[in-house]
Structures are given as C-alpha cells and as structure tokens.
Length: 340
Image (cartoon, rainbow, N blue to C red; front, top):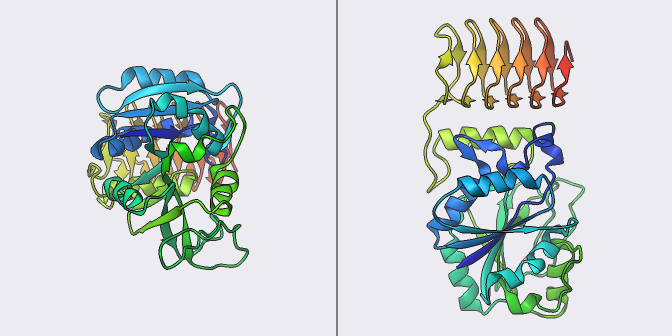
C-alpha cells in the first residue's frame, strides 16, 4: 500500500511557530508531528509515501534524511502551491501504477483504523472513501452528509450556527483511475473541486464514519491538547508518554512543572518557575519565578525572571523581558515583548 501525504500548508493559524518550522515538522513530544503520521501509516502496512510541498522545502529534506525504516519517502517539489487536490493528482505518476492508495493531511493526529477503511472501500467498489468524524460543533469545518448506504451526498459549507454533524477528517482512500482526467500541475481543492465533481458525475464516493481519535494540530490550543492527550494515553497505537515529558536535565528542583508540560532538548527552567499545560521547544528558557501557563515557547525563546506568560505563543528566538505580563499574545520570531 502507498500513500500521498499533504505537507504543503503554511500553518498560518499556528504562527509564529510556523514562521520558521513547517507545520508538519513542529515537534510533538519527542519527534516531528509528521513522524507520528508516518509511523501510523507503517502500522497499517504502508511501505511507501509521497510527500508534496512548496513551503519551507529545505527542512523537509533534512527530515527525510534523518528518518529511517518504513515507510520509504519520495519527495515532490511543487513549483507553486497546487492545493490538496492538485498535489494528489500531481503525485499519481509517483505511485508506480498503484490503483488504490491513501491520501491524507500531514498535520492530523489520529488512531483511525486505516486497514478497516481500505477494506470497506474495496467492499463497496468505491472510487473514493472519505474518513468522517462526528463533532458537536461543525462551524469550523463544514458538513459531509451521507445516505443510509454511506454514500456521500454533498459537501456543505461551514454552517453559521452551532450544529452537530459529520465532518471531513482529512484521510482518503482513492482509486487512481478516478483522478486520471484531472490536469496535472493545476491548483485544485479535493474538498471543493474534486469530490463535488465525482459526486455530481455519479461516481461512488462513500464516507467512513468512525469514533477514532482525531485532532487537527493547526491551532495553538489543539497543538497543546495533543500533548495532553498523548500524555493521558488517549491516542490508541501511539506511545504513551510520561507526564511531565522532559528531554532536558536543566530543570531547577525548585521549579513547579505540571503533568501536562513537555520540555524539549536543551530547555532551561530556573528555580521558582511555574509551568502548566505548556510546550517548550528546543533550547527555550524560563527565568526565576516566571509563570508559563497554556503557552508554546518556540526554539531558543526566553522568558525573563518574574514574567507571566499565559495563553501565548513565542516564535523562535523571541524574548519576553523580565517582569513582563503576556496574556493571549503572539510574539514573532526574534521579537522582544516587554508586556502585552
């Protein structure tokens, strides 16, 4: 089995972290979030993947060189962004004649049973099968209603009012033949262009509804939640991490570090610091008596002594001055904040 993994998003909602790190390569616990995606694919018998992106390409090459074992990786450079559908169509020739393949977003944490999804796709003789998950509030996502037989009826726009429903979970089983008519090298959305066309043409497009764990890592709140859920063992098949998750030996014993905190390599935490529900990436530092709650500290960022950082995101090399208070702030890469 082969897969196309879409890694071309710019990660605008997760800025300023993604100003310097592509969203799929932002660390999640002990490795890039994309590593978790690829490991999940390998557990379900995927031995080859195609990665496609036009954004921050160089870090992906370093990632590929450093990764070993299943699945093997083929890289495609998009000369200009192709969108979710265009990237998949552009990758067809790299699949080596594989008719049935998986396609998925590279910024999703899930324990979806891909083996069962592929089996259901083949049983139904589907051209496309879309993983669906039920949410109580579909406003951020849009709805994907299905008939009694599981066939997708349409893709609806994001509702303006709070309504529950099934949404697209960003994982697909596809038949290459169903996409052969799409032109190569053109920008297209699989959600807004390709799937609606297949449905309008009467092609068999089915939903695969499951109660699997599913989380889009695209916002600071969701990124932090992923760490909480991995520490609490809520993602089946993935490693369970001890909380707090600490990859550094530079934490003063007088510091208070909560269970749902992840500290990356080279992080320094001074005495009296109070850390809760936060992620500190490589070589970030927190000064004496500083408070960091529900926040993300980018690589080499620093929080000065006596500062209070709550519900905030610091980019790489950002600085928070001593005694400052930040609440709901975003400090860009290399910037300095004295208050906010």
